Image (cartoon, rainbow, N blue to C red):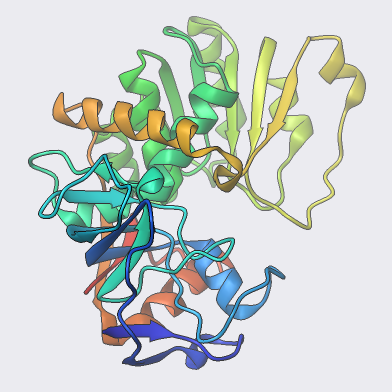
Length: 332
């Protein structure tokens, strides 16, 4: 099979395109003919060695995927040949990545693709959608009518947080850096969309809160969070979600935090069990069929341009290039 792979960790130029053996599905596994794979920051971290995970070479990157069941191993019960499927959580903990024509994937990590959703859309929404759902509901316990603030409402995760929060009948405040992105965030359903560069940003947020109530759930996407700012805007018993900034050591106003019964939650979607992620996927599929959200693709590449796809992701994650809106998808 044709695949993108690495034989050592390093910059994007370590990515090779070539032939590797087609895997065979073991007990409980499904051989998926991959049609599309999403690109995420975690993919670039593993490729570069920034995250010291044990991997075996040749290593195929890629967490997200969508495609069609080609064959099934013994003991597989949830899927049949020809079923369209999507999923995430691959390329980790010894699992094969998805930048390849085929991948053998345990059926616990597979979900049916809804009618009307393309494989590219399914791959684009996989990791980011599951992440948003876990944060909002498993960890954040979001309830109808509450107020959510998320930095970057048109980013990969941010755009999903906006849409899922609205699907759950919450109110959403978000930010974006250009008129085009602010228009998009409004189209995604945000109740208030602000320019994150504005000198009056905090005053505009507080003005909204004076009419609607304080922020119940603050979703922090910044690599260097400003916790005094967030904590000062929270409602009593509010929750702050942290999902970025591995090396950050921000100032933390402890007194203001605990006297308001606040909670701070850090999480990574890869820690969620297969059952927890399956519940996310089921609800995501149901909401998609109801027209409550849509995946947002920013840029597509063919498999032989996987190096360029990784470079674009890296430029925006680490280099703050602001040249990407939505998800990167590699079509195979």
